Each structure stands twice: as C-alpha cells, then as structure tokens.
Length: 116
Image 1: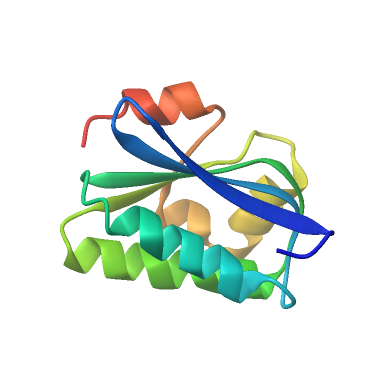
Image 2 (image 1 turned 120 degrees about the vertical axis):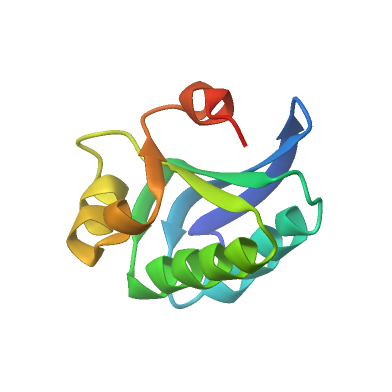
C-alpha cells in the first residue's frame, strides 16, 4: 500500500481479520481488495474487516466492501465490518447504505463473537 494507507491480514481463532490503517481510497483500493480476496480464500465462513485505524474511506473503498461482500455471499461466507460508532468510516458506511447490507461492529472482539 501507499504511505497513506496500509492493509494487513492476520488470523484470530482461525478467522481472517483484515485491518486497514490510514486512508483507503482510489490510490490503494485495488490492494485493499486483493488482501480481502486472499482472506476470503481461507474459507472460514466469515471475514472480518477492521476499519478501526482507518482515517479516510472513499467511495472506492466502499465499492470494494460491496464487491467482496457479494463474492463472499456466493461462497456462503459473510463479511463482518468493524467501524466504531462516531468514527469517519462508520459515517461513510451509514451514508452509503452499507450499514443495511453488512453487520457492523464497534470492536473486532464483538465481530469475532458473531457466529458464522
């Protein structure tokens, strides 16, 4: 990713957790999508994406979430999003309607406690 944004993946209890830090926008959305697709291949029934350290999320980042979420659904998996209440990413997800399409949590722990 660019110096402005970084995406990493780790596993917690066998569940892939993708963490975005900094800005997710047009300049790095393709890398964000690639990491999410890699997480989807783990086939654990769900992928958690944490936007807790994300400072900016533009329409391309939102598009990636919808695209990957739809792809996961065809694979009988779910995309669970972590975006704390009051944060900029959460507001963007609400404006875009993503909060109606996905389960959104305030913490990674809460998302991980959601049954697959």
